[in-house]
Amino acid sequence: MFCTAFRIFSLQSRPHKLVSRNVVRVNTVIGKKHAADQLEYIKSAAEENIVDWSEVKKNALSIQGSLNSKNIDAVLLKVMVNVRNFDAALSFADYLRDTNSELSLGSINSLLLLYYQIGRTEKLTDDQKKFILDTYKSLYDKYTVLDFTTCERLLHALCVIDEWKKAFKVLDNIFLSCKPSHSAYSTLIATLFRCNKKNEAMKLIEQSVSNNRPLMDGAYEAWINYILRKYKDKKTILKYMEDILIFISDNLTKVNAETAQKIRHYYSSHSWDVQFTKIRKSDGQCMKCSETLDPLQLTGEQFKMLQENVKEKLIVGSNLFLKTSPDELNRFLEFLEKTAPYDVVLDALNIAYAGKRGPMDRYRVLNYVVDYYSKMNKRILLLGRKHMLRWKNHQIQKLMNKTCSFFTEDLSQDDPFFITAAIWSGPHTDIVSKDLLRGHMFLMQDEKLKLIFRKWQWQHQWMVFINKQGRIILQEPLRFNPYAQKNNGSWHLPYETEDVTDAPQINDGVPDLSKWLCLRYKPVR
Image (cartoon, rainbow, N blue to C red; front, side, top):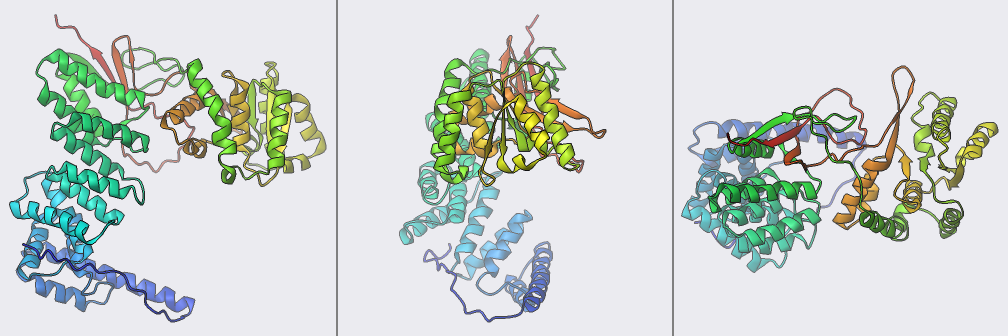
């Protein structure tokens, strides 16, 4: 077995000589070229039936590049794991064991990754399990805190041998520097379900979601397998399977295509008609069953929570984000007291810059939007920046005559002003902006509040676009809930793929309506 007294190499600072920019650039190019040569040699050598790893290392080091005697073991292992040449990687691991090599931290991490990848599809040997456990003990004997990469590698390796209690300790260690990754959470959750620790798994799912780490396919698969393993009665299984759908719905999340296929397969085999479908954007109708998705609306309690928190979260609690002065803030709050509520709040500069043909086009777009709501006798708040007051006097005056208007300092962040004005005005007030407002949602640390804000945004945000003919298009807010839901006994579930298209697409803030599952129960006759 590997030597347990691991020698951990740390980076040492080195003196640097001053060199010209051109020399640095040339050396960088040369270094990258030779580094690629070294890696190509390692990949080609790994594809052959290796007998002498010492010769491979010697040949790799003879090529000019960034590999050296201290890092080559770790790089060799990492390259072989990345190309999924596990036989060669195991052969090299045996070589390290036979030569009683003292492992660098990079080599340890690469071996942990290797054993995790292998353990996902087959049972590890006793020696491989022992290496993982010895590594866990040795690292925590030597260090109080481990770095993020080592923690992640160790957690995954511990999970693959079902050492979930030790993995929890590693998870806590990660929090000392940052949030654990999606993979760390989902891997440990899957392990808990595999070990029949449902209560622990559900608590960790709640923590994962609160830390903005949606579940990955492996966690859902283990959750489904746990249900199928534990329960035999069909009705009971369906009840607990629906818990997964309810979880997806409650958290406004999407599953990936692999999870969608697993859900489709299970329900299809139990008297359900399950079809891939699309949702019609105009009214939320399913193109397979013609069922219409639920209306998008907040409860009075939800809106009240948003209204009570918006001032603290978007203004008072985030001076760095707002970039405004106390005087300007007070002036704005006094303005709201005098003029609110409004029917619609315009992000004036954002709207104007939908017009890309110069100042006159910008004015044309903004004036069109103002007129659109004026004709409906809407009470309008136009929120802009002070440099807009330098537009042609008759233009800006015309806009101000039709609206209430407030202009922030040019360096202020104006988005929080218009969000605050809209939410303070009440549950029926709309906003007009192409800004997707992700930064504002990020500032809300409470996950429940984020979901409420997202629903409010879908329900109330209009967007302005210019088509190829120069015509102004006002896109209405969504009128239906675009996430998983149950309608008259049927489920509609959105999913996502990793498809990448080269075609330019406009991000209009609307979730993808082209990838959904329609699940309908078919009574057995």
